[in-house]
Length: 453
Image (cartoon, rainbow, N blue to C red; front, top):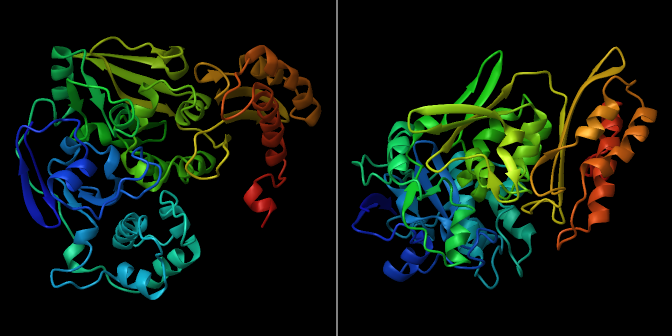
């Protein structure tokens, strides 16, 4: 596979590359750019953060789980390229020096590049922008002060990269869903790579050989978001940050849950289609989408089919997807916002859910007329609470009805105990989420951030 991209303003052309070589390894071992650090090697610590610019703008990404073919046609800037051609410090670099934002320095390059990217985008929600960068000695206060101090300075011209025009690099880098359908039909045993936030760990942690690999990042038609009066549709390659932004006014609770989905770096890469297709029982998107009545759109060659999202998950590790078939989009009806998405995890930011409960209950004239409730982390697949729903529909919307429906949870779920939570804890917190939904609907404050404010 041959690829072309910009690195710190310089055109790089690579031939016959290993498709699962990571940008981090290539930077350090082949280019000698050792400012980018390896910490966790799984996208959690942010020490390897670089800035990647494509047609959607500048993004902070974790280079440890970013495969080289994903860079074709893009521009990459590392910490060595944050400073100017004459050694001029970037405003965030100078602010880090002035405000003592570094001690041991191991995490500093990653922090700097996250700040360079957010500075380029004019983003000032620094707690969110830096949630994917961990520091064990400096403390976050001086780093946040540095990010704020840099706000008033203009974006240096040398970091204003643009993607490069490139020819097709390989059939395994299709430029449209039509091309993808053809090449996947020819290689139905291939591994599809969308954002690589999950697949990347198969390489860095499990040391798996994924050959052959098909990369979806150039399929622009899979990145479309369509919002009409009747329907909301996300292409499979819509990343989580774009999805969250699109949902902010339509379903704000869902959008807030997405803000807690991993980190900015991961959300820039992770896709809605990938999150669904990997079939994780603890994926955060499926419960919310199931609660919204979502439909999954699949394609194999020229044949398309649509299935209710909840029917796509058959059993643990098993989905209703044939060899050579891929997720093309997910859609759900445009509807009044009755959705609440509750993510329970040990860390507030950048953590995997122990329980993710999503509630979409319709009430007319004081009576429950419809209920769609789905959970992640409670079964081997994302699963609806059918018995709880049945215990609510047709009943008065009251605390008594909630209390009478709670015992039905034991008919819907028999959760497991693992390192994230015990079975008892999962079941009890799921019950509490239903009560929380009711109390919120009555105007009570239940959000821990609001209660403690």
